[in-house]
Length: 536
Image: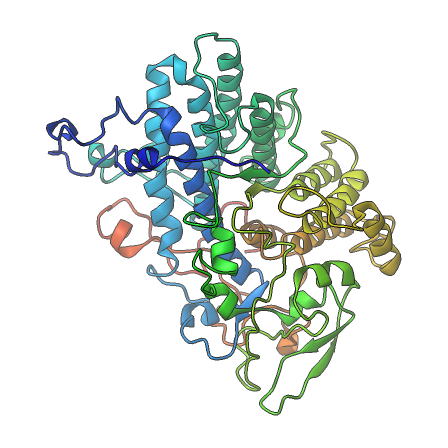
């Protein structure tokens, strides 16, 4: 596994805000304060990607709750906005605030690289980080300040750009990044990446370009069929010839067990002192989710310790056992169902398949997602690298592979992902959600792809699963009777929508609405969908 170190000096330098909102501040007045001449892009990139990992982690947590992967167990108070989906301008503000704070550092690297060509590699990698960060923002908020954003005191009231137009800009930005990597490769004076300054690929430019292609594919697949479809369809033929990254893109800026561990591990297991993490103490899988592993789901734990058996959808004991402690009797329930009492959260629900270690890589893009995106693209007329069936099956295989790989990158003893796929299909031979031979219509093919993406993304890629659900309405839910094996929707939902869910987050009141008169009025969390949301 890759390991990178951020020095104490680097951390100190990177903490400097290069774009202060105070126009009167002159950083050169303090001889002990770092200036732009000291905080160079090679010192900043590792921190930028550490921050990106933290941002993705926050969106994954929110997405995992919204997509029905987990819910708060017994004895956990609060979460009233989650139970009702009536989000306010105070809900999940970290998702917005941290992204824009981190975008300032990204912008600093980009501008430095534009002024000094020797930093071309770092500028290109910063463009990738900016495209990734803005996609996170658009997918939850819609319109965002892109063109005039992150200028600090230069413009504290930036205009908002239309969400669809931002997507178009992000497609172009990834092309700019790719061109930047190639330009740097051709420039002997360009400062090279090292294993310390590049916390993602350790200086492998080809992988950076492939990663950029992956991110571009995600944008195109999501935006296909929308108001920018003309741009999208043209861009499907403009991928760089290096192809796609067919491995997990892992960020590791020096995670360790003593003072700087993987943020996902911190949230779902314990801190560096060994104290049990909040999410490890709070959350359990939903009954709806467990139906994708068990044909008969043991649901809930009432006050009398009685259990209810419900019909499931698929058989997937291998992944169920890899993911959950005490599987197949892992406690589960439905969000907002207080009539029987929520089950208690046992010690560490999730197993080593996702909690591999304190210093594990933080995956910014999973190999399984790439294959499912290629499958969907192929199913809609864009065979970029194989047909839909081959990519679909490879996506399932990569899901097994990730769960069966240890922290060192090796398969656990006895693991054979290819055989797991064959057994999975055999156990669900007649289901078009698993067996590609049974998915014969366009609707069945799309449902199979998105459902398998949903299963593979369980608790590790929740923001993408949530976006895919809003975009496609898959996997299917049935709210009639609110049976917990048919829907993940909260019993306490206040949403007037047909699917009874929220569709967006609202702009933060203090950090945005109170200081920027250009902030759009998004209404409430049930209105003003993101431009690619076809379920409204």
